[in-house]
Image 1: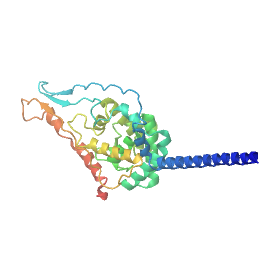
Image 2: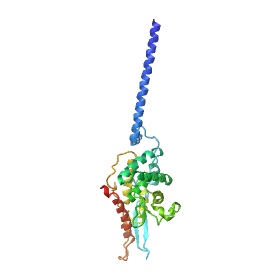
Image 3: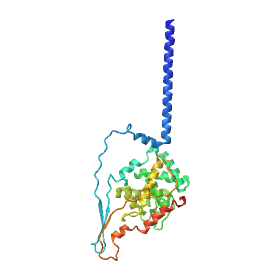
Image 4: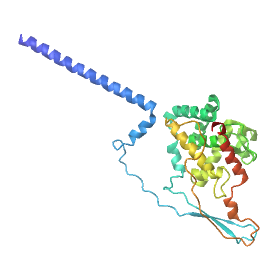
Length: 321
């Protein structure tokens, strides 16, 4: 009798252990499903979790490079060559948060596994914001992401330039000859269109995005930062400021970054920059002949063509305000 009771006791004990194990496994599976679903719906939550001390990497951080000295650009007067205007511009360094350098673009680019979902969010937001058909917007976004992989640029930066330049209008054309989505000066960059069918391809969305991105990449590389590259892109490299163009693009770029991480960003409103431009000191030597304009005067004044392009970008969202 005692042996029978022992068998029943052992059986009940094993059965209890098995039942407890099943409940534990089922509960763990439910937690895993809930966690995975949360990451899909709120991908930015994964980034926040990674920033917690528990998951933070213990690898040593690289030392911060010392600040570079300001760069002085000098322009000589063509006639006599004696009167010189000095434009002091801060040189790019790692501590200037308002500059986006080339080495940071790769880390900001969309990851391959997330690009499909990001493109859907970005396409939907741009389509609503600029009132462009979803299929057309999807084609622009897809081309921007493909071109970004070829040029090593962030696709969101390309889309930000495209949005501010033309409001996603592939047939936009300015009085100074800028054409298409990225407002490329087709006559100036005619050689870049040769492999795409000639200058007539400037109004082809795919060709325009590719050429515009190549130009932007060249300018960013030459300038050393995205801000400097945008200043060259709008044609204000020789002037003290770009009329706020760079800040408009970077503001839209930051909005697109938020959209790409799943954040709820309002599609209405204007493209006004988030931060106001910082003043830059101008040093000039007074000319002997006061009647003729000095290089400093030319540097302070933004040319009409650039003002027109800035005004054109502001008008893209007029129906929304």
